[in-house]
Image 1 (cartoon, rainbow, N blue to C red):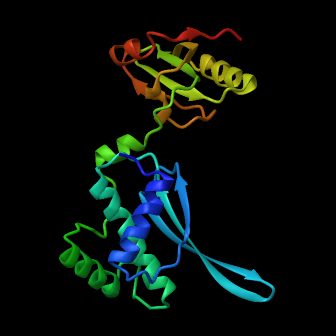
Image 2: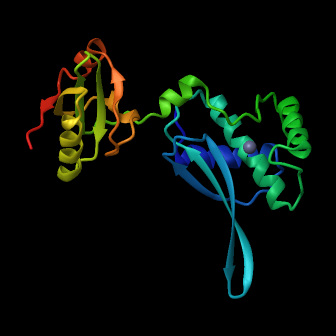
Image 3: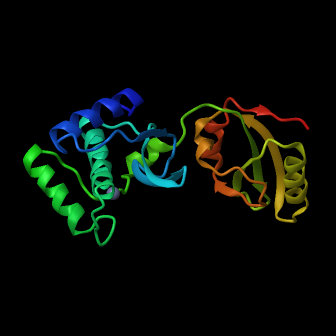
Length: 217
Ligand SMILES: [Zn+2]
């Protein structure tokens, strides 16, 4: 399942009661499409009429698909950061001895499997790649020595032409062909007009470009 705002609120309230004796006031929940983290706890000082208050933001990736239990563990992990920060306790680092003590205690008492690792597994990273279909401008580049590659270009006429014309003038290059493709494979590649090529093979590219359309400029 994926994290939604109602799931966040429900989970926060449940564990606030069960684990933190209801000591945490409701933070700002921020569902995020970020691809670099699962959860984050952020403190933002906010000054109003000369008084500074902290606003706490719990931010979670809504793209990652995990079993409910694991999502709960990720939420509780951020709640520990929130608890330490909002009660003014000091730890020597983000996951210092105080964090670890609270985490181990919760794991033992409530049978959870919270970890300190914010690192994503290979599968999780793969999941975070945007799966939405969108149109890409792809330059298919064939080198005279038989190599082949591609580049995802910005959808801007001048940038596309500059890329094509510059590469086309290079003595190593046989042909640069421009196509439109909706294949989600290309979502993971940065869009830029840098004069580079991601090397690939005809065997890899042909099936990926099966539905591509020739781009005429
Ligand atoms: Zn953490």
